Amino acid sequence: MTGHGFQTSQTAGRRGLLSAAAGLAISGLACCFDQRGRVQAAVVAPTARSVILIFNCGAPSHLDLWDMKPLAPAEVRGPFQPIQTNVPGIEISELLPGLARRMDRLSIVRSVHHAHGGHNSGMHWSTVGRPYRIDSTLINPGPADLPCFGTLVGWLAQRDGYAAGVPPYVITPFPHCDSRKYLTPGQFGGCLGSRFDPFVLDADPGAKDFRVPGLRLDSSMDADRLSARLQLLGQMEQSGTRIAARAADATDEIRSRALGMIGSDSASEAFDLTRESDSVRDRYGRHSWGQSHLLARRLVEAGCRFVTTVNGPSITWDTHKDNFNQLRNRLVPPMEQAYTALLDDLQERGLFEQTLVIWMGDFGRTPKINADAGRDHWPQCYSMVLGGGGIRGGLVIGESDSTGAVPRSRPTTPADIHATVFRALGYQAEQIVYHQVDGRPVPVCDGQPITELLSTG
Image (tube, rainbow, N blue to C red; front, side, top):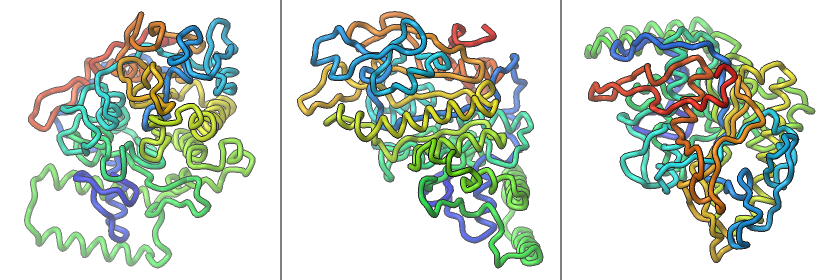
């Protein structure tokens, strides 16, 4: 679901207090489950409690950030130079000096690949770990979608008794999308049901007047008025057409959890960035990406299990033209400021070892620079970066060929990244199933964990 604004077949607008309450609960606060999906979890010792996904919508160039090719021809390597990191032998782009000084906390996977070149289908494959039925940008979510790994982490958390006062899965500031017209499938509840939708902020945390509506009772609504409205709603439901028992039970649970959340201060406090000092907010950057990263830290501190910060809006990293100036002047500086601040803040607060931070995009960019000084879509090889939550730092997994076009060694899929995340959270995801709308079982993940990255092996 969305905080406000975005509407899909899985979401509905919220009218008044009760609609807001139900909406918040649909974002993942209900703890009732379809019995077909209630399976015995295969659990291993977790090294992480929460996940923060930094997702660069539009796909940043791996060749200009994480997988430099200084010996390649000029039409491949581009103008940026590699710099040494604080880990001997690992070089990254001169555009990332702050991250170069923190490379011992991060590891790069340089051999990720899939086969979808459209933005929405590419984002689907990167976050769901499986191909969409067509390779296209002009697609939207539906109730039969397979859920992404963020949605599944929230689903597993609720199955295991999640009780924090904030939603288990939050997306900030806006959903994965090609545009406001085409949202990425997989990021909502899909075949699990809308009660497992993430809470999508759909608001800019960097705005001066930023606030999340519906987290507190309106000043005009006292406890007596709320009680009277709930009694009236109950009478209307009793006199209305009966619905399936399972749906009715789910609705009751959703309402109960939502009202409990509104009656608590924990959610409104977690989303309230004014509780942070000016120095902390300045450190992250007074822009949408910086304040979204700060909000992600506040949410995992409050117990949220998965937060996605979408570095958008829309496909802002889609650099078909003027790639190098866009990266240098518009895209990388705010992203790196927010990223480094997040890493340091988590470390200083003792949260880094229990929070797995992932950096990814839709796919990579073409090795050959085009006539507009840009790079086009390239899912055949790209990079992802992981750190924290028990992930070993200072490693490079896999290698691309001399132009960054295809994996040369240790080819890796998005599903392998997801399997690594699930394992760090304590799940053997290949042994846990959910069910499609037609009842067919699907393993939570069919990838293989990258054991070199895991501190537990």
